Image (cartoon, rainbow, N blue to C red; front, side):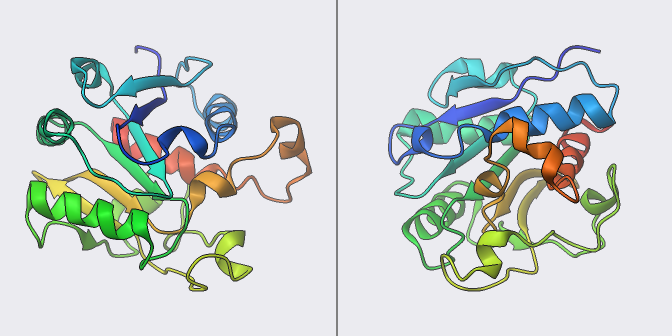
Length: 205
């Protein structure tokens, strides 16, 4: 089995490079701890406008500001997803009325159709892909009143041929998992376990 590479998507608009820089290290640490998956030790930044995106098995896209794909980015995003790629998209504002959420959802409607991004049920295979969850775990940012001051009890997705191609979260998992790796041992429960599920589902483990 080839090494798992955490690929962060670079897009021309927004602030893709200003969010959760330490999150990938914590997720990669969990993949090493809980699975037998060979793991590349550092994230790789992949321009969405480049054909390099088609070599990625798993992509991550996040931000707080405007998402407005260029024509090349739009074409590549659609082709990547329709060809079986997986993109985990996380709103760092966890605000359904925020600029990131509104602009990203508008992009998905334009690319895949207005009804393509839908809530997934809490008994979806994603929630038992490795660890078992009763739905999407709550983040501390939801509980402390940041963003829209709501706990989102769902995730959304775009499915292609019965499989999730785009997993979309307003819960701000990126910032939830963005801390110094040395502090991970102090957690009562490793909060990146759900990230292991996301990767396991994406790769069909």
